Length: 320
Ligand SMILES: O=c1[nH]cnc2c1ncn2[C@@H]1O[C@H](CO)[C@@H](O)[C@H]1O
Image 1 (cartoon, helix red, strand yellow):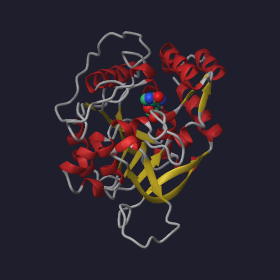
Image 2 (cartoon, helix red, strand yellow):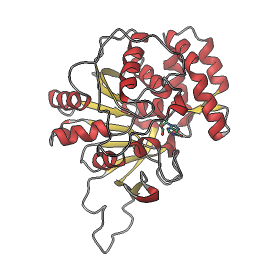
Image 3 (tube, helix red, strand yellow):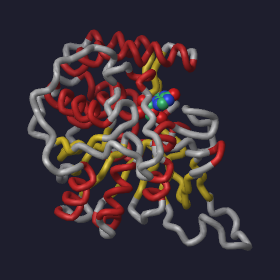
Image 4 (cartoon, helix red, strand yellow):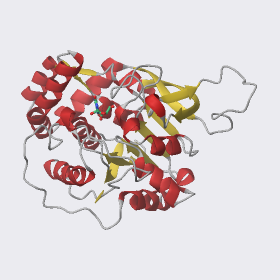
């Protein structure tokens, strides 16, 4: 096999973030070279604490954690937290003891810029929360979008309803200005939206299967998953959970599990549709110049091999 792909996970753990981090750590295709933290499922301070904790659970305290920003890109916009999805502590209300480790000195955006410069074209950033740290990296270093190999992001609801409101998906809604900067920055981008992640459902039977495995990570996840199941039962009336973040991690190193379309994606930043993602599908040449004209394209996932994705996630989580 060739060299492992270097990935940095920008994360707001979060129950499905925990699953995604564990999938990555158990995947021979990738080398996780760092985690950067962001608000979203929890505040950034707690995201950092949870990131350090999850690495301790996995026995991977060699991986650095860089704390990201505590504020949205436009500092006056309020930070929105989805603790009703993941529990007050972000990890299923288990009140784990504080981690022993500390984040590194560098901030999340500084770490992203540094690593992309150090390994030009070789770093994949997998963004699992609002895109503020990535937008700050773009702002910090005009070369960042060229230096970074690829950005694979969980975000958007392409041609479907959102999950915060009918217009908007949570990660984009968390910082629409940042998302629009990232979508139009010119980097090689794969956007994985809830239009595909909603097809990857881990059923109650799958959870039982996870529980029956001896893997320490599987055992840990079974402790924290109940809150996530309860939320899905209330919000969607399903006895299963959507595997947004774990599915997105796979797109970073097994991209052929998805199919993609390409076009310019913009984000609505005002009005009742704030946070809406709108992809121009290149099917018409418009008479007038518009907000999509002459902007760089991104790839947007349109289909997913959901059974294969679910099986891979389960297999890797059950490995010890
Ligand atoms: O209803 C919701 N509100 C806020 N966040 C949510 C909701 N449902 C899921 N997620 C979280 O946001 C990302 C996918 O959009 C996932 O990380 C998921 O855990």
